[in-house]
Amino acid sequence: MCSFDSLGANSHNGSMAHRNIKSVIHGYSRKKEEEQTQLVAEENRLPYINLVNYPFTGDVLEVIPEPIAEELSIVAFQRLGNTIRVATPYPHNPKLPEVMNQIGAKKNVLFEPHVCSLTSITYALKQYAKLVKKTTDPTARAQQRSIEQFLKEIASLTDFATALGGVSTTQLFETILSGALAFEASDVHFEPQSGHVRIRFRVDGELLDAAKISHGEYHLLLSRVKNLSHLKLNRLIGPQDGRFSITVGEGKIDVRVNVLPATYGETIELRLLTGKDLLSIEKLGLAAETRSAIERAISRENGLIIITGPTGSGKTTTLYSVLSLLNKPDTKIITIEDPVEYKIAGIEQIEVDHASGFDFAQALRAVLRQDPDVILVGEIRDKETAEIAINASLTGHLVLSTLHTNNAAASFARLIEMGVPTYLLADAIKLIIAQRLVRRVCRNCNGSGCELCSQTGKKGRVVVSEFLEPGVEFAELIKKKATLGEFTALYKQLGYQTLTDDLTAKKQQKIVPESEELDL
Ligand SMILES: [Zn+2]
Image 1 (cartoon, rainbow, N blue to C red):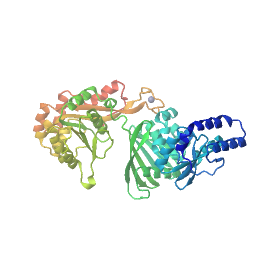
Image 2 (image 1 turned 180 degrees about the vertical axis):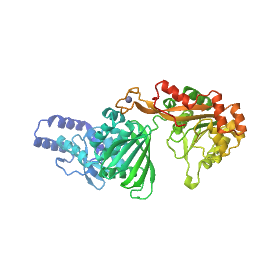
Image 3 (image 1 turned 45 degrees about the horizontal axis):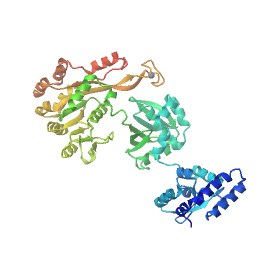
Image 4 (image 1 turned 90 degrees about the vertical axis):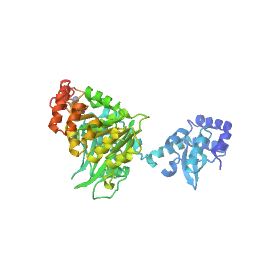
C-alpha cells in the first residue's frame, strides 16, 4: 500500500504526471481518457479505478468532507476495515499529504490512494448531494437565509405566508424564526386547530396571524423543537419548559420554549430573547430627565434603584439597559432572576427555584457572601426580599430591582405596606423610575400608514416614564408612614414631570400617536 507521504517525497516526478493528465486528456474520447489515466497510475505505481457509475455510499463518501473533496479533487469510495480507498486525478497535489494525514488522524483511518480520471472525480463529487445528509446543525442552516435578505423579500405578513409555502420541511423552522425576527416579534405561537396549525407572531405586544402549516409539517417541527430544547417527545400531560440557542445571521438568539397539550395537539410558545435592542438605553425613548437621573444614581457606589410599573410595562428591559451601563470588567455584577431572560456576557446570573425553596430572599443572602458591586434582584415581592435588598444597598452595594406599582410615589406606600422598617427606606432608595410602554409612530411613514406598519401608522413601542429622587421631604413622609395620597401630592408639589406629562410631550413631538392612552 502506498501512502500520501511517500508520494509527496517523490513530487518532482509527479508534477509531470499532474500536468500530463490535465493537459493531455482534454479532448480525448472517454475511452482514451481512461486509458491515459491507467498509464498515469502505472507510472506512479498506484492502483487505477474507474468511478463512473461506482456504487458510492454516503458513510464512506463523507469521510472526506465535501469542501475538501472539491478543493483537492479527492473522494473516498471504499472502506476495508480501517482503510479507506480514495481516488484522485492529481495524486501529487502538494497539499494532499498534510490534509489527508489530518483527516486520517481525526477519524482514525488509513488512506489508500488510487488514480481516477477527471470524469470519474466529477461523477463522484456529484454523489455528495445525493448521498450525504446536509448538516443538521440549526446554526448553519438559519444562516443561509439572513434576516436582511428575508426583509428584502417580504414586506408584509402576507408575503411571509406565501414565502413559507415554498420552503422545504427541513427549512421550515429556520424560516419561521427568521420571519419572526424580521418582524421583530417577541414570541411565536404554534396553535394546532382542526384543519391546520396556526402560526402567530407577537409584535409590539399584539398577536398577529403569520401563517398556517399542515399538521404533517407541524409534527416534524414539534419534534425538532423538542429535540433542540431537550424536552420529552411523548409527554402528553402537563406543560414542558426548555430553551435553546440558535445563530441567525450575525447574532445569537436564545429561545425559551413552552409546550402545552391542547385539544388538537401540543401548542408551542417560543419566546425570542434576541438581546438586540436590550443593551441600548437610547432606544428605550426615556425622557432626558429620567436618563440623567439614571446617570446620577449609577455613579454612586451604593443605594437602591427601583423600576416600577404594572405587568407588561417593560420594566425588565429598562432594568437590563441600566445594568448594561454598569457592565464593565472591573465591576462584579450578580443577578437573581425568575427566570434568567437574557444571558449577558460578563455577568453572573442566578435563577430562583421556587419548587426547592430557593427564592429571591435566599438567593440574595447567598449572593451577598460573594460581595458583588452590583446586584440585580428581579422583583421585590415580599418584606424579606425588600429588607435584604435594602440592607445590601446600605452596606456598599448598588442594588437594582423592580416593584409592581402604578407610579413612582406609590412605591413608598407599597414598601411601607409590606412592612419594611421606615428608618431603612428613606436612606436606601436613590431613584425610582415608573414607566409604561406605548405604541410608537411608524418611523417609515410618520403615521400616514404604509406596508411596514400594516397601514396602522404605528410600529414599535416606546417608554413613557417619570422618576423620583427622594430628598428630605419624602424622608419626612416616610417617617410618619404617610398615605399613598400624601406621597402623590408631594410628588406633584415638587414639580416632577409625571407619566402623563411625558406622554403629552411625546405626542407633541410626533413620537407617539394621539390615540395612545395610559393605563393609570
Ligand atoms: Zn408606516
